[in-house]
Length: 169
Image (cartoon, rainbow, N blue to C red; front, side, top):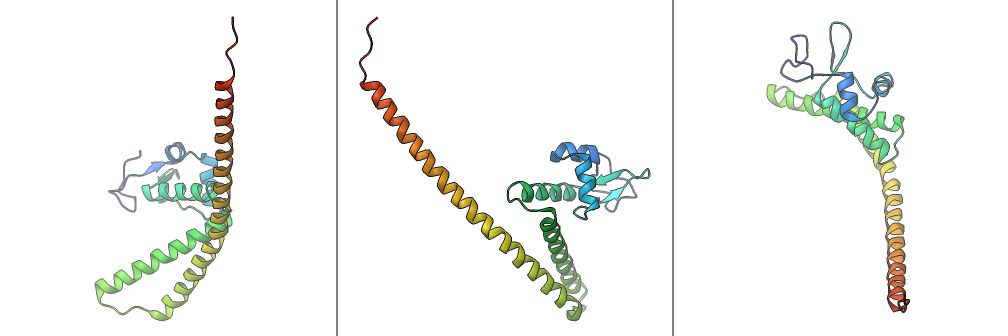
């Protein structure tokens, strides 16, 4: 772990170098650089020598990307869209909270198009997830049926084996 330095955005938050993050998340350093190149990940900060520094939030973000790829088979383009929608949602929430704290009215003309864009992205994500869930449920049903058939066959074989006379020695 790299200690926080005054140059960090949040000097109280721990930062991790790329090798530490790669080891912790199970992805290669090359993959982390690729995620950054494709806009899926932006390191929180850089050290003076240009070394990337990652926060706990970045690590959670990397783990989410991996889950979306591995569990749901999302493409990097689909993941990028999801990431962008989540970032927009976070920005909108932050704007609303700032407006509530300061008492200033929200700029609805700016917020509304972004909110619509976020809603469209969320609906697209759901449209991608639902068929995958259906396929997973079908696979689960098929696997349970196979397990049942194998368990039945094992029970039959056990019965047959128990019914056979023991050969004399």
